[in-house]
Length: 127
Image (cartoon, rainbow, N blue to C red; front, side, top):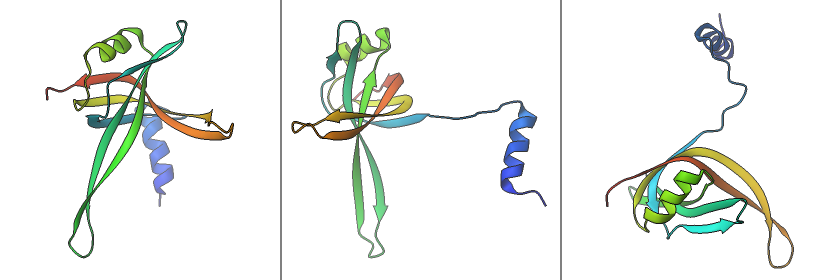
């Protein structure tokens, strides 16, 4: 009998693909605020917040909606300029990219972890 792990590796080798790691994120949601320019002249970045929703139902039958907020960063020059000039608060967008983790210091100098999506592609939907 072949385990699912052995079968998984066999399928990857048979197809000819071997991924040592994968960091891929796909989000569909609404923009939380106007895009902002950050960074420096040498290393500019545009950031915006994106809201996504998850709907679920309790055992009692009550429906709930949870909103998650994502920080989206754009470094690609042409995409960065397009997003900054045309993306508006409340607009629905599709974002494809990768997760990145970092650390910033708060006002007291304490390190605070951060998570962001570095976008490779942003597709605008009409409102």
